[in-house]
Image (cartoon, rainbow, N blue to C red; front, side, top):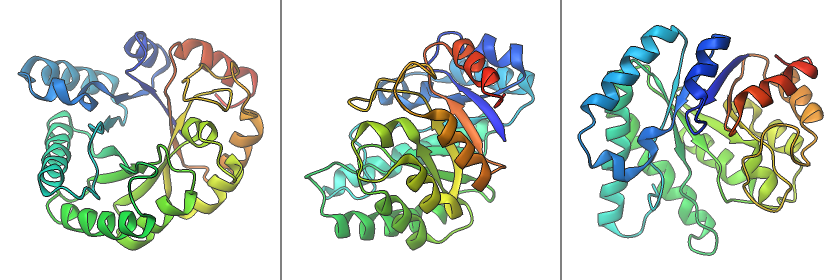
Length: 249
């Protein structure tokens, strides 16, 4: 397994350096930042990724974007932002990029969402450099099969699933987190890990919510021993301490 720290934490860099971990860089997930001069920010992360010497991940922009967008202009913008993320990742020497499914409940018909998404990703993958790995993350969908069916429809070795366990727990899915893991396991390449109380996407440090993380992680590592995991938490040191106590770190 490989552990990473998301830069949503103020102490992400110092924690990654202290524990020899990779980073999941979330700075470029904010579309407003993408409209600014990125020279200094890209230079900073180029130096940092090289200093860490560990595989890192880039999180792409996601707000208002959807690969199943009905509006052609929004679909063009989604493609533009996603390609921009791939260019930034290339400059940073990063080959793995997280993208959200873009699913919005009560807006998209399920079949439309899957069909449109599959076409979008097949076309985009043809434009990417060899070796770039797309990690498709669940967000608001209660139906774990939606994410699975998109992965199956795209059917590309560089198109994989990112399971956000906190998201899956917060949206009151009828399936347990262990069931999410079991169903997605053949496609699963990356995990977002944080805690909550099952009512909202709180991004709590591990052990601060109600998720039975010990049982969930034991099940995950039994099925996916080579998985990478990003701690998307406010205090990564506190979560690492919890992981150590449970024998996971």
